[in-house]
Amino acid sequence: MAEKRVALVTGAGRGIGATIALTLAKENTDIAVVDYAPAESAAETLAAIEGAGVTVRYYSCDVSDFSATKAVVDQVVKDFGKIDILVNNAGVTADNLLMRMSEAEWDRVLSINLKGCFNMIKHVTPYMMRRRYGRIVSISSVVGLMGNAGQANYAASKAGIIGLTKSVAKEYGPRNITANAVAPGFIKTAMTDALTDEQKKAMYKLIPLGALGETEDIANAVKFLVSDDARYVTGVVLKVDGGMYI
Ligand code: NAD
Image (tube, rainbow, N blue to C red):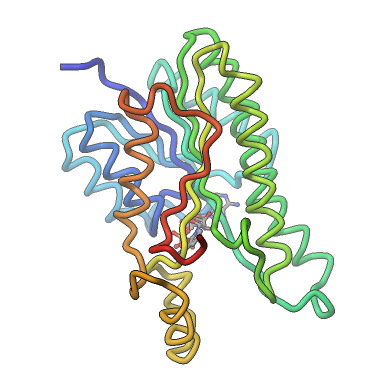
């Protein structure tokens, strides 16, 4: 059996991140869950991961906080001995038309979604470089490719993740560290549950495959990108969107 790996997954308390963590756990990977929600809210996720027969630990941390993320990454390495895989999944929305968007709405979304990825990559890569191995996957969005009215802050943050990913792929490739992005379309989660039925109906018309995606669809893409099958894949943006943006 291949050596057990260690994955740090941000925003893994629920939603897409929780499914990514569970999917990797089923691939013989110990999991560090990093989330800013109270640990109790992730109890179900943690139990499911443990049920997969691996070690899981919960770290409470706001990914937008540079020094807090450094402390958490150092602690994860102390606890697990290494980090093989980083999945930057934590993300938020604060939607508004630009003319109504406040500076606070802009700053919050950019600092969690984009600076959060920078913080984690910045602190994790020194450890990956020492071992000459690393797999980084950041969760972008098709909105980062196509733009979306009412989501200028979110779209900019998700487009930023793509530029960040491509740059990291170029800088760290020689150290055998790959960096890729997954761009989900509309996936069934708390984020999309908040949409009205009318908004959902309008959305289905835009999706050639005619349905919302499941969190497993995103987790399977991440599973591929961190697998040996993807050892020669870096700097890509893998759209998982039912054809919504072609
Ligand atoms: P979600 O709101 O269900 O879960 C997000 C998780 O991230 C939560 O556990 C939350 O506590 C955590 N989080 C938020 N801010 C954080 C912070 N500052 N520090 C640490 N943890 C934080 O969202 P989701 O739908 O599962 O989305 C996961 C990712 O996928 C996000 O990056 C999102 O932008 C992206 N995405 C989602 C969809 C979709 O349709 N749901 C589509 C495209 C992209």
